[in-house]
Length: 503
Image 1 (tube, rainbow, N blue to C red):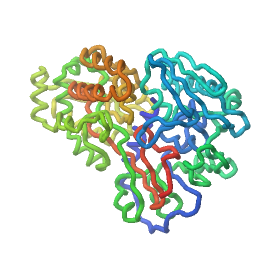
Image 2: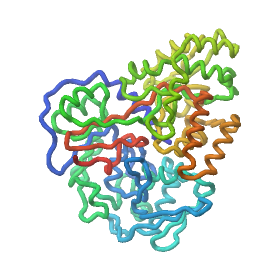
Image 3: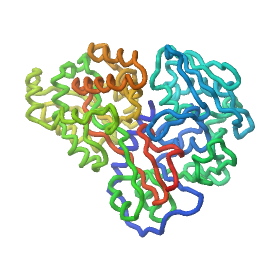
Image 4: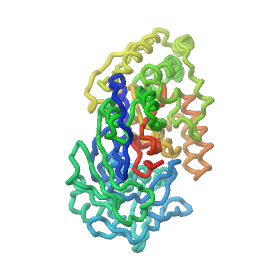
């Protein structure tokens, strides 16, 4: 997913500016029914099929309603789809739709509109991956839609709730104007007369919205502010009620009586794209991958580069969730002597050469990678490239420095991090590891809570197989005035408006 790359850009941008905060006198928190939100990035597109999940949430959730939403535990909950049910074979998802909803241009929301939206999302460059397993969307009657699947997809509802089921006016989809002019049925109406592109976006609350109680603010102001120093000072002066924040500013935020909300958002480390050694033979040896894991001191890197904002762990399933296994976090405890021994046992006592990509946004980690791998005799030649080229080309190398988004849903984590082909994982190589393939098959055959112990075992397997070298999981952090509560959602770089409340 494209949001995974955006997470990397955001993480490094925050690090680069962490030491730049200045001091100002607070002038109190905002009052009234308006709320002013400082997010890091500008809206990528008003078209739900082209928008980015990461930071587009506050913008899109103002003007669009989703078919499916998420609750605070990342569980799918009703939106414009009031209920849903899978067929016994889990190949048909039938959704009963909310009635009496109208888009802001007067177009009705019904099954025909839902099907047109879903087809539009399936065709989207960014949204299409969510619907990769769909064979057909079909209108059953005026308020019922059937989603027919080519194979069971346990992550579908989660991805829809994460930001891939926003419903737009059918007329606007047909006209092809959504990218610049949003037309939805959401709780707010975009006010272009009071908005300045790239600077501030203003949304006015609708009267009588079906989910009125979830949105307590009369006016929403969203300001993209890329500089954390500017965001912090805007909070101090009362120009913002909420800011995407920097770990270095947490002590001063608390001194000002602000709320601090955080949760893990990304994993940071080295992604192995060649676990079978087809391109770089040493990586096909488990002992080499384990040696690399033991050589890095993740806790120290979290403290020095990650400002301590996160969890030192070697797993790709989010810390604090059901599948994450804290007992595995010592599996690759920092032990350089053990790492060197493993390298010798694998037949590489003097290491080996490797070429790795590098971009300006990953330079905070480059010295540690160079030094640490050098201690194992692994001689790195860096191939410098632009950030855009990094995403296009990083996975063509056998290993690369990565900052990749986490998902709070276990089935989505299996799909997105292990089994499916992604830009960062072009060769999932599941079939090359029989024990992994067998367990993945069992997970796909199971449903609901039956999957959890199996996914827990899969997490153990890929950790023991050193599937990647995870140093730590990094937090997303949000400051808010004492009267505003933000609930972080792992999978969203900035939560949608339903997770921003008074009190």
